[in-house]
Image (cartoon, rainbow, N blue to C red; front, side, top):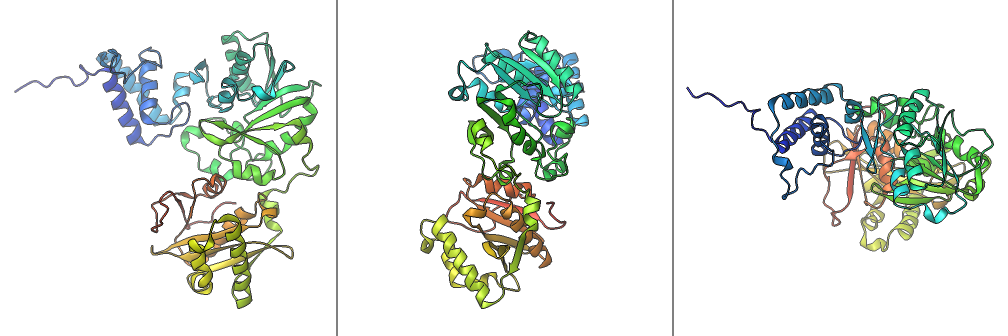
Length: 481
């Protein structure tokens, strides 16, 4: 009988990374704390365990590093770390107590969220330089967490002093480690407090990556994100559901803490739809990042002062003022038709060359009972929009269509309330799931639908424009507001 070779004796570094990536993928772990895929996460864990630089080339054809042999005892240590990642579902940064942001290393543990703010990009790439100048001396990093943005700001702007503030004393303990690690004790001061400081200082630049996750998304976070302090993520601590509780207070109070030419740079993640619904009159500049142009925004002090003194109603408050009238009579269908014509004139280049023209020729048949439904939306006595649903070739699947809100009433939570009404209608009619199709450029709409639980699905119809995005949601339980 031939003796089998020890399978661990001849593994190379690249072999170990590939094997670890396969295990991570099979375990279904979530990424997003410094990596976006299984291979990069595996490389991080393997290289860290071996004491190698995290930028070690693993796929460069002219490098011998990927073929470096990994001893059996080293493989055992890697396996232990990998098992901890899978069994605890803690981010790799917590297991290694090391995180990187824009090439800068930071200490991190469970007392603070893992640094990943896109604001670091706009700092390093000079996206803010147009609004800053020789008069920029004082910077506030609000919700500093582990202090990474404060440190990077001090690196990018060597003449500024940074005040880093957070409600969590534990997070500030981590921030202090990083301030000392990078030698900025004389230029970065740490302060504990809830919200903006009341020390009479006027800042030239305010950076803020606040808690902004909406209630629905908080409930659906993967375990890796739930391992982080909820206080740093949950934007609903004052009883709201759209994630904007902290931001509402911030935008009202910020001008009093800003110098005349100051700017506020705010990160809101995937919450642009909720942000614009909460602040429809705010004049903001959306900044380009690696994640797109809808996650980081810049607001001047002048724009903040122009906001209405009364806070904008939340989407929930707006929904309470709406009336949804079912389309049933000939008069109702004529009103519905006029809204669709208005919609076509505003949003389509040529109605006669679109599917909306077919709808106009057969509205009752397409959106009438028993398989279809349409709603007219009123704000008091004012007609402000419409929406509909119809059946599809897929059994149990309703398609939501023709969701249209007149311009003056957009960004006020009406589309969200209308979509929820249509979902409830589809459920009441016995449908098992609801779906919608839209253009990739409609990022605000896509964000809204995703906040209601919609996820990418296989196209349920043939469309001449293959780039359409198809989203669906099961109707087995009510969709959260």
